[in-house]
Length: 161
Image (cartoon, rainbow, N blue to C red; front, side):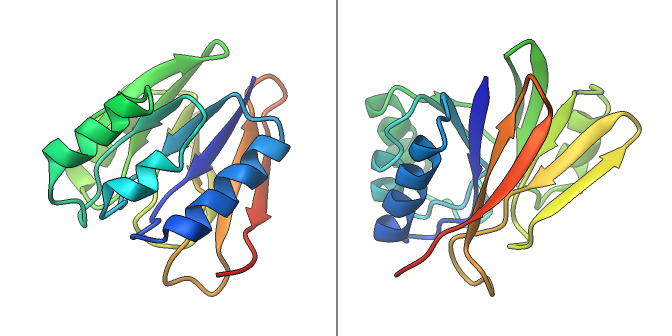
C-alpha cells in the first residue's frame, strides 16, 4: 500500500489541489495530513481517503471536522495512530513535545508530523520519523509518498502557485 503524506498547507487551496493530484499520479491509496490547514477548503481538495490531525494554526475545529466528514476522512484530533498495510502509523502535527512523547512511546512503525516546514526522514528507536515538508513558507514545497510494503519514501516537489 502506498500512502501520501502532506502537512502545513496553510490556506493554499490551489497548491494543495496540485499536490493531491501529484500524489494520485504516484498511486497513493490513502492520504495522511499532519495539520495546519487553516481553512476547510484545503480539506475539500483531499479527494483520496484520508486521516487528519489538527495543527497549531487550526482554530475552527468544528468546521474542519465537518470538512473531514464530507470527504470521508478520519479525524485523529491532535494525534493518533492508524494501521494501514499492516503498519502502525502515529500522526501528530509536531508542535507538542508531550504528544510526540506519547506517540513515540507507542513504538509505531512510523511517526508522521509537520510543523517545522522542513522535510525529515530519521530512524529513532525502531520508529521511522517522517516530515513531508510544507506547501507554505518553505524554500521548496514538498509532499511525500511512502510504500508501506517496501518502506520506500519519496519526497515530491510541488511546482506552481
